[in-house]
Amino acid sequence: MNWINALSQLSQSNQAFVIVTILSVEGSAPRDAQTKMIVDNTTIHDTIGGGNLEYQAITKSRELLLLDQSVLHRETFSLGKDLTQCCGGKVELLFEVFPVCDFTVVVLGAGHVGKALVAILSELNCRVHWVDSRPSQFPQDSEFWAHNTNVQKIIMEYPDKTIESCPANSYYLIVTHSHETDFEFCEAILSRHDSVFCGLIGSKSKAAKFRNRLSRKKFTQEEINQLTSPVGLADIPGKAPMAVAVSISAQLLQLNHQRRNRQLPNTLS
Image (cartoon, rainbow, N blue to C red):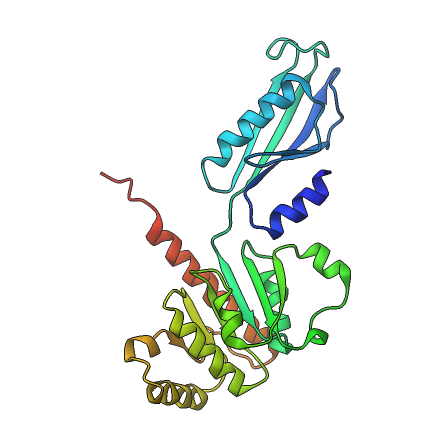
């Protein structure tokens, strides 16, 4: 498999990998500058020329994968002196490490706000599960899906079944065209007890009505408190879809940053 196809497949399946790129070549070398290959934990895709150089690149890539974090690493190899290859030149490699992504956002709704949200989230280091019951609401351009490999389209049949299939520790954004569907999603998400965030679009009066309905459905106050509505940062104004999407995305980034900081080990002694 060539590296471009591998990049798409590994991104879509959320597997860790390293892109190895030949940055520069001095003298004789097996491949030219800008040649790439991809290394994951079990397989290599494409080649930077084989031989000891490629073996060392694979070994270094898998060492970097063990760090489980995004890394940019540059290293120069002397093919003759260091690697005993006949070429005899020098090659500088760039290692770009893409770890498994633990920032999963489930966008429930493909209307105006949903589209604006995905336009932003598709450019961030997160996994996006984009859900709607209406196939025609999703972009029909194949180039969109080829470019936005971190976005997965899900055609919904039943809200509760859709939520059951979502990954644990997800961030949920409820922005559908139907208040009743919004409420069904709220029920399903709060019943799972494993969401990082559950945000509901709408006014303060809508939020109050939903909380009253959840209380009548015997949800505890602790469970109801997991619902954030209206969703978005209050100090970012605007009602246009993109303004709302910016406000919500900023809130998610802020929360995810805080979550990551809590998970970092304390190295001070």
